[in-house]
Image (spheres, rainbow, N blue to C red):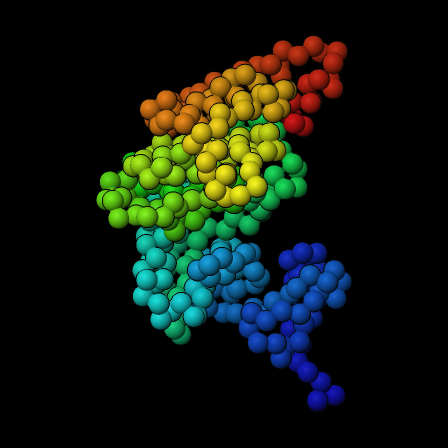
Length: 332
């Protein structure tokens, strides 16, 4: 009996069952849940934060779901990769992202709580939004209902407007950078490419962003502005609404060329049941020339809000005898 390996009781984040795992596991190592097979992680205490499971990972580090034992709330903790700790540029980028995001106080921008170091480990503590991204929603549902697309668009446009008021461009708007919390509230994340709206752009030789949503002026190496983020948001909403990216091509070169040269197919031709008002708003946001887009996020928001109002009015004025028609608005 005395030789039996110690056990630790933990809760599986997938099936929510309390199970025992080997107490000999090193912190952050995993073992399969005996009930559902999902990996269960040995918790790690990082000051007052108990890391409980992986949410996702990227080039800079891994994000964990964690309990703040001092304030008794769930948070997200991003641990910087140890191999990057000696890379001064990587450290500067990590700090820059944290400071850029921390300077913005908006419901739909992920909140930064603290940035610290513990036993040589750099980490960022932020608001928890672990209910998937817009990208995963599109993958699961193929397309998102028009009403939800409009709600997301209005909120993220407001978030980008707030960033602009602090002189920041996001520069990588895409479905994967819009996360959802437990209340289904969209949160804009990943300010790793963010920079001042007035920064000198002469020395930049790389087209930053994601090819499916990148603005034509970035491809042409012209000056990047808030209207470039607007274009990318329009492309993100187009994808969510129709289930198709704005342009498809066999190579990246042909894809980026399409943003510059190929006319955009209106969303209501891709998805006939979508409304003209929503289609028009997205077409304007994605105009090839920045001067032909909405001149401010306020204008873009108002167009989306008008479309949302018209959509809600259409729902309430459906014939009382045709409930299937009424609910179909919600199921698109």
